Amino acid sequence: MFNFEKLETWQKAIDIADLVYSTTRAFLDAERFGLTSQMRRAAVSISSNIAEGTSRFSHDDYARFLEIATGSLFEVVSQSFIARRQGFLNETEFTRVYSAAEEQSRMLSGLRRSLRAT
Image 1 (tube, rainbow, N blue to C red):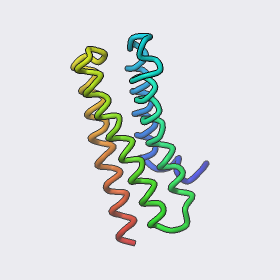
Image 2: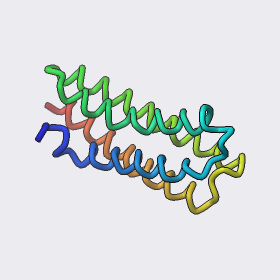
Image 3: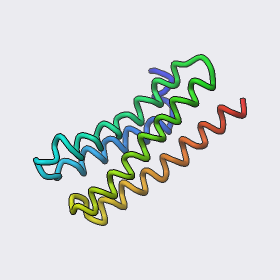
């Protein structure tokens, strides 16, 4: 088992990717290379950057990857707003993504704070 697999923050990021993949599955085919692709790439980037950050030897480098993961998370949130306004996400789906993103944001912030404290 790799170290990052033990992190609840990484596990929740995988859950967000699963959620984004399942909700974007119903998007219009015309959006396959647009919003669908962007949301999926951003969602995958969250867990990928958390994992990559754990391979760094300095806390500053690790924290930078967590910042990138946070940026990807914020992309998913922004794209979810657009998807809702375009009628691709209903209110329930939007709320599920938004709530998961809020939790993930808190976890990433906490992990970054813990790195600064050491």
